[in-house]
Figure 1: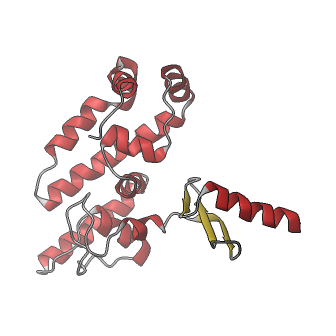
Figure 2: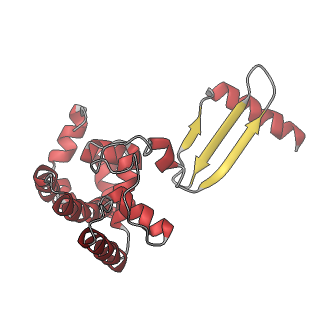
Length: 210
């Protein structure tokens, strides 16, 4: 778990919040994830449903009211870090898995079982599941992509995961003392290496033209 501020510790200890987020069950699932890939995968999928419930609670009227009264203002990235102790990339991966239809998960598990019966080594993990939903059914493990759930492998970097979140706005400005590039995804997360003043200068340039 990440280091929490006093106000955040108090918030998570609130009985209403603990019950609404089902934190006790979440903590138990986090502690009992085993090393066995098949069992661990099933437990992680169970946890992913809890993650979806947590995300939904924070956007509910009750969640908004309770957080506002507590002086807590968390976005999705902060929820993943403060509640689960996860970095943004892994939080979104679990959240996405938790929203998948059960039939997709069952099909993936069946193909993994079949591959194992044939002596193959399927990538039975969240990464493998999400690849399966995009590739149309290839469950064979790939080099550099079969690390434990929650750990980044050679080819599973944060950037590789994040680019799968659709982009809704981009802007590039080649001028001034430094080029400006900014991207915003559908979660309203801003990706840029520029300062606020540099971005404002680019916006001012565009505004003056239109």
